[in-house]
Structure formats: C-alpha cells, structure tokens
Length: 549
Image 1 (tube, rainbow, N blue to C red):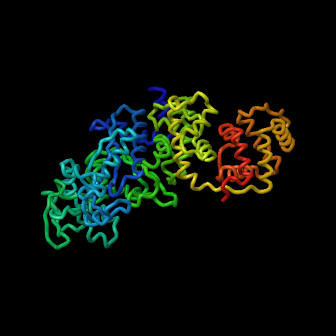
Image 2 (cartoon, one colour):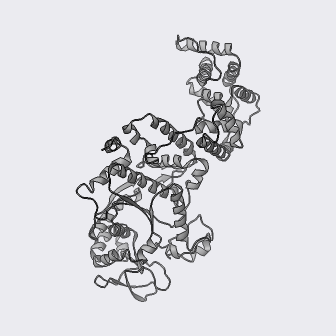
Image 3 (cartoon, rainbow, N blue to C red):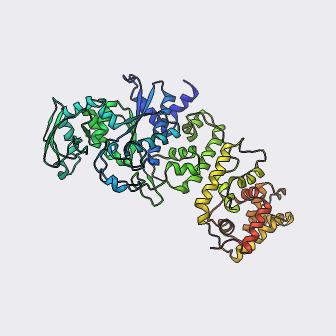
C-alpha cells in the first residue's frame, strides 16, 4: 500500500472518514454490479441553486477519496425528479401567469417560461448540467421521466405493486390521520390532462401490476404501474430508486434526515440493501433563512464566479459540511484567501498532512501552486483606497511588491485582481462611509504621516513605544519598503498616543482612511499602496477631502 493510501486510511478529513465507512460495506466481497454507485438527487421545481452544486461536489470528494483507498470502480449518477408535479409557480421566473395554468403537471410537461427548452424541467436540467460541467464533474445524468418511461424502473414498480400493503404500512405510520385516508405510494398521471393526481387507490392488483382509482371528477380509471403511467410519492421514490439502481451512497440535507428510516425501510421491503448516508447542514442567506430554489435567495453559482474562482467556491463547500453556513457575498473574500493559504501550506506537508488539507480534495490530489502574491483582502483594500475602476490600477500596486509578476506568469493573480475590482464596485464602494477623526485620532494620524516621511521621527516614536512597554530590543533598520518596519511605525504611533485597547487605533485608521470598519495589516497595506500615496491619503482625510458619512 502506498504512503498516500496509508495516510488516507488514518486521515480525519471527512471525505476519507465517509470513504472508509463505505469500504466496509464491501469488506467481504466486491459489489456484484462491478462498481460502487454514488447518487445525488435534484428536484427541478426551481432554478438550480448553489446548494445543489455543493451536494454533487461533496459527493465527488467522497467518491475520489474512496478511489484512493480502494480499487473498486465507481460511478456517480445525478438523478433529476423531473416527473414531479409543479405544486406552485416559482417566484423568480418570467411568464408566471402562463405557468399557473400548468399546476400539478410534471415539470417536463410544463412549458419553459424562458422559451429556450422543451419544458421547464428540461430547462432546469440543462442549467444544472451546465453548472456541473463548468466544474468538470464526472457523472451520468438520469431523468425521472426517462427512467419511468423507458422501463428501467418497471421491475421495481411491479415489486411495489406486489408489496403495496407492506409499503403502505411503512408510510402510514409517518402520516397524520387525515392524510392517511387519501394517501397512496402511487401517483397516477391522468391519461387525459397529464396532471399528477394525489388520489387514494380503490384497488392495487399486485399480480397484474395495475392500479384502480377515481380521478378528481369521479371517473374510474385502471392503469398499469409501468410505462410512465404513474410515479411514486417522493419518500417511496427515494427508497425505490435506491433499490432499482443499487445505490451505495447518497448524501442529502438535514431536512431528509428524519425520513432516513423510511427510505431505508422502503428499500429493504423491495429486497435491496439501503445505501450509506451522509446528512449535511443547510445553507442560509444573509438573513439567516434557508436558501431555496423557488425563492432564489442566497447566492447563485454564477454570482459567486463573478467575484471569485471556482476553487474558492469548492473550498467553501468543503468546510464543515455538518455545520449550517451563511452563504452570501461577504463570505467570498475569506474563502479566497483561506484557499490560497492552504495551497501554500500543501507544498511543505507530508502525505499525512496533505490528505487532511482541503485542497487535496478540491483538486483530487493534483494540487497547483498558488500564484497569489497579494491576498484578495488586500486587493480589496487597495481597490478601495484607489477607487479602482479596472485591474490595471491594482497591477500597479502588485508590481511594487512583485516586480516580475505579470498577467501571463500569474494568471490566478490576474483573475483575482479583476474579481476584486468587481467586488469593490458592487459591494464595497456603495457601503463606504468615511468619518472625521477625533482629536486623539487626528494627532495620531498627523504623527503617522510625519513618521512615514521622516526616518528620525519614526525611530524616535519606536523608541518611545519601547520605553512604554519595557522593550529593550535595539531599534529596527530603517527600510520604508519593508512592511515589518512600516508596521512597527503604525504600532508605535498607537501606543504613544495612548489607544487602549490598541485595536481602537487600527479601527480608526480603517474608518477614517478607508471608509470601512475593518481592514488589512496596515504595514502591508502601506508597502503595497505606497508610502507617498499613504501620506497623501492621510492628508486628504485630515483636510476633510474624503467623503464623510
């Protein structure tokens, strides 16, 4: 066994923990079907949201982790329940009045409100596949409409008819008494209207594989359960699909966790072994509400990619899948910077460290080298201080720090600069609020500006600070290109002017000079933005020439 496999077998990274659990499923013999099957589900009742993408990404991470520790082949199916009836019109699509005429019809029978595809279900399926293809996922796409109509599901549907009473017992235990009276695991598709009917069964013939029911007008119908004439209610459909496909692993949001025993019981009653599960916490929008396909709240994949890389989104999805996370625009800068921190750490790690590093799972072990010579957060502050309209302005600052860097040699840096300008223009600029300094802050800023021009004055400030804190170290070498020297000046000014706690001094710098409540390590900012430019910024603030909120 390789060093990598050895490390993976003891790794505490959650993809490897789940992969090892899955491997135990076949510790006695490999699967008869010849591969381990991973599945993710999608309900195309609304436009795909970022949570759907996260489910596929996380499943893929576990799949790849499994492939590190096992030689058993794997497959991933993305299953769309596009035969589901449209219960309500989503609030974030056009032509809502037209859609309202097709309530309860299967999503693949509802006209596409965007006018680009055969149906609303086809449109949403295409969007999902585009999102998944953008990230290079390897998967097979399954449509419930084709699955039911093609005959692939017939054997299990006939078994559902045969085991109808047993399956109903499982389901009725979970329902209120009122719901029990009309419930059936089978939902007929009306032969004339095509609508999905929620009606009780008058008779289920397990031998013939037929159901008899009255439609909403009181007319009696008898239909075979095969050939796309019926679909299963969503809970039985979960378990039946597992049985039909031989699914070995499926993850889903915590709203499904309470139904896990039902899904498993359905699958077992149909004679098959339920898969391993993984329940993840939900994503929340900026107001703490669950993100939803129908309401379109939160942030979309396309929106994230407007302001940051695909890898930063993958990093965000990797982190703590069992913890609810706020998914809105202000999480992007941190995700970008933490992703690159992990890239830099990866280079010096051994096998054990690497398999626990998120970037191993993001890149399936083929981890690139970070070319971010300036953090994304710093780029945002540079954009803010300079009111940057394009990335060329930021490259002017970047080249002070890394003179040889270019867009060609550092494509990731170049993309980040463009993303930072967009993010600044859309989110930072509209909320920038400068304030006037207090008397204490004004005096401190005056001294900071003077120290950035006068080395002797700067060293005197540092000496006074050292005396205040009992530091007997020698004074630093004067180097206005060194961010550590610059930071020592900033720190000394705050101490000499009596800011307590010292963070109040840094908060003042950010609010007075940058129009924000927090910001970068200021010595590093000065090194990049420029000493002369910083002095000019201080002078403008003290003269009241920055917009004061």
